[in-house]
Image 1 (spheres, one colour):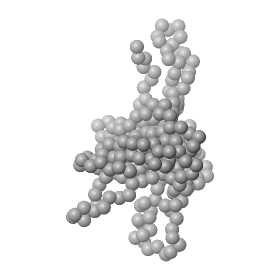
Image 2 (cartoon, one colour):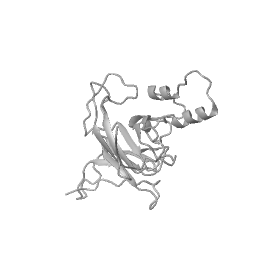
Image 3 (cartoon, one colour):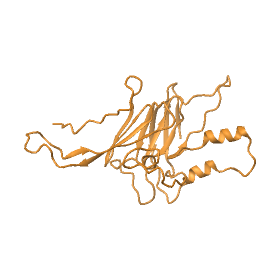
Image 4 (tube, one colour):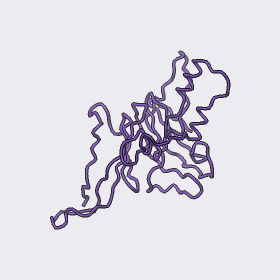
Length: 227
């Protein structure tokens, strides 16, 4: 017989306007994400049985204090929590906690996020979040994107580089699609995301992602893009 342990309530979700788009149960808790980019990690911890002697079944588990983060680009239509190997000593055990989050939407390009970095950032709220005065060191990938070429850059180039700049915790983002025959910018139209291969763990990677990582997205207008 299944036993209800507890109920997770997303107070920030606007009923009828937003929805859950991804849910993952890891080794230490539950990870969830809504279409508004509301990311939540709720730990599942061992607890002393409070129902002893009450005649009610007990699992000895309870929900701990959650850590939350709001992704900057929304609305999202699909997301995927995945566990990727970091180096040659790390396996991609599917029962382990997820290491990365894939997300995208009809107008939001596909992004890959470092999940522990998001939950430990100053923008997060909860026990895992960093304090406001914590030092923040940009990742190698962020530094690479932010670095200029040493030449004087005009306002238009600066605006473009600012738009392309990776956010905190974001390790990869799909490039913008080419314009259509009418000269209009094509939208990502992401309807589903699939991980095809977790790749091979390596000693060093610029983005922190394993080599030979392969994934794909299905679009609302019937396309499948392979990365």
